[in-house]
Length: 121
Image (cartoon, rainbow, N blue to C red):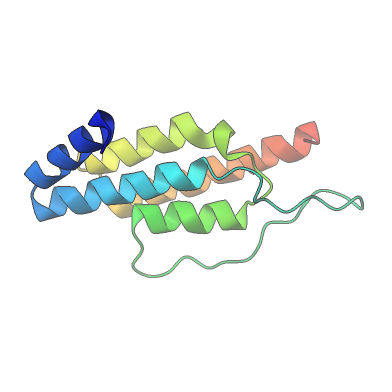
């Protein structure tokens, strides 16, 4: 096993179950945001319309990021990376509630969608 993988595994094994779950969730987020090329193309007829995916009653921050990424599939995930990572960190590291962070994530995605449509990207 390469040293970087070994170090990651060693650190993972030192964490309590709750922190392990957070680390795994964040790793899934990083994998998802780097999954470029999986977004459907916009139609020639006009701007892409977000999918209608309702917010579940009980949702994790990672689940919200997945839902919003699918809802706003036309937005480049790299454009959201810094702000999304900051919100994720506020939840995991600073204890902000999931519902507050999800509200902020929804506002972030809507703002990026509006900007996307305004620029015609």
